[in-house]
Amino acid sequence: MRKHIVAGNWKMNNDLAQTERLIADLKKQSKTSDTEVMIAPTFTNLWQAFQNLRDYKIEVIAQNMHYAENGAFTGEISASMLKSIGVSTVILGHSERRAYFNETDDLLAKKVDAALAENMRVIFCFGEELADRKAENQETVVENQIKNALFHLDADAFNNILLAYEPVWAIGTGETASPEQVQDMHAFIRQILETKYGKNVADSVSILYGGSVKPNNAKEIFSKPDVDGGLIGGASLNAEDFFAIANAF
Image (cartoon, rainbow, N blue to C red; front, side, top):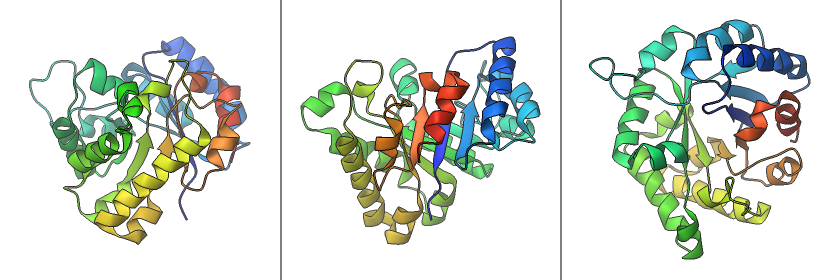
């Protein structure tokens, strides 16, 4: 049985005081949800968030990490550093990291390996641009991103991998992906996994959707058979909205 998961990616938002206020609001809402809930604050607030939520069913996760264990990588954070403060899940391959920081499939494969070596769980992101969708090339783009970064792994590695499909064209652009388009892509992703690793792996991996999920569309999106949850951006910065999404299953 795949887990229902909703993860909030706070991106570069919320200083310490704002983080503490939002966490206080999240605590009030958290008892209402049976969904697995995660939040990804900024690096500077991870420890405080972990300390505040360690007795609650809200996991604190990281937005990114480096592939090296340590060394001369100014400004970077390693997997072992995250583990040392109680963080055991990391988002890798987010569309903004790919676009703004030129993260490639090869680099992401190294990051995935580093996270798994520390027994971390990975939320691996991928998705096509608007030009790819208009050219009807979205399946090829998605398949290549998954294969290039993940298909060197053995089947057991997928016990610690969640997938997050992000159609970049449907994030903050005014364009929207229909629930049917979301389901079609998620089913395609599951088929890719089945072809490589077999039905058991394909059926066990949770695939999240990360394209502007909001309280008013979450229920319809989450009703699709191959959609197991969401990677939430802006709506995760409001506790009531975030848990309305988490409770949409």
